Image 1 (cartoon, rainbow, N blue to C red):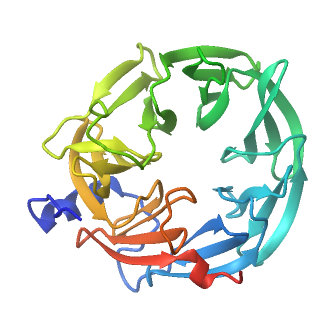
Image 2: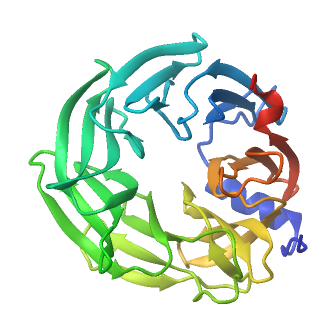
Length: 344
């Protein structure tokens, strides 16, 4: 693993303190245990961010790989072929299910209890999204005409932004906007296929298109990573190269936006794995945190802790694991394989 290329620990603490303002982690008095949840191998796992520990808390379906939290603190994920299930940590069990017409994939939950679920079933109208009312646990609508397989979704005001990958040979990467009041879908930005898919991160002023590539293979053959910035208050989308002396070779997962800093799972130019912190004011890579595994999803970033996980395709011999990073020390402190804590 390459050495951590940071001038001082003080720089790490200052950057993460600014990025994590408003974090749920207590900064005075006794530490308040903070938990997050993830799914794999037919189980839902609870991670304790203070103790860097993991335990299985519920059984679900093996197809559940992605969980989305609602405003009530419940978590929704795929259940069997064509359903969603709701896990309530307060009750420690599955409390609701919603039957869908097609298999669910990407899930986006809004603070008001609405949710959108993507389907990879191609129809004569293109692909589709289901619209859900989570409080009522039912499907309330369907959006047709999505131009490709959905790789990510983001909500900004009364617009839903959808990143897609065209399935035809001449298909494109596309960002579409769906006006939720009218249901009208329009194209925002398009690019030719290039060996990656778009993941989305959104702030109050802009949407960021993150090029996610495979974690495997050589890293020296890719063009220098860049983001596509889509202004939400007027202006045209633009490609923005990443600056700075800390060079990253490839972005291998979706971004986690905290304050004005975008955290990205990546590989460096030597092939090592890590998490890069991008200062969006200057689009400068200001921090690189080495990790021992090919993480492709960042689950949490706070003032003291970062938690990431790898996927089924990138996991090592021990299977999918959670990686805990101490942000004050700027280093990985624990790797916990989920199978060790599963009833399987």
